[in-house]
Image 1 (tube, rainbow, N blue to C red):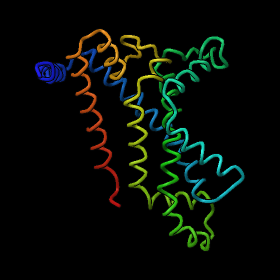
Image 2 (image 1 turned 135 degrees about the horizontal axis):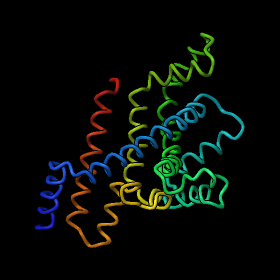
Image 3 (image 1 turned 60 degrees about the vertical axis):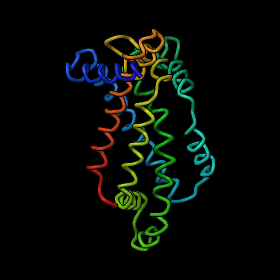
Image 4 (image 1 turned 90 degrees about the vertical axis):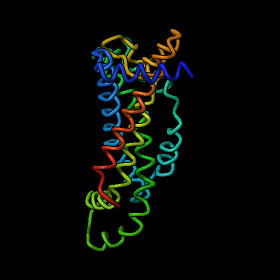
Length: 229
């Protein structure tokens, strides 16, 4: 009980004092996670729309892969990106390993399947309702996807939030490719893991509370801006 009370007090103290290191950690966490959610959304939603609009060779395999990759272990995604970005890897000369960019790439590997699978589920009933009318009107694939996306805008906001939730809560992938370097690649989740290992549970709990507040704030802002269904 004392630990929990101390954690709440410490969290409030850190927030009210606007601790410079904490602000940097929170800001980096938001940049990386929002960036990965945006990349995953931009890549995944068109795939989901294509899967919802029509069948094509390999349709079943792509749909199966998108759904199976929902459970992709973060450390596996991190290891794959690490091998790509390491000095001996194909993208090694770019020098991206242990940078925020590498962290965004690793988290995007996790968010893209989420966006694809959930967008497919969100757009399929919409296209079943309006797809035939659009086809009679002569709409091509791009226009059909655009109109369906507009009709399912509220659901697509939820898709983005699901991708963001996957990214902001993730530890393994960004720890592998970011290295948890203080002042450079240290995020809220990697800091919580570090402080827990050090035995500083009040600070770890305080950071956990701050992480929850940040997630709630982002979700509240997104839902407030989302169009009403």
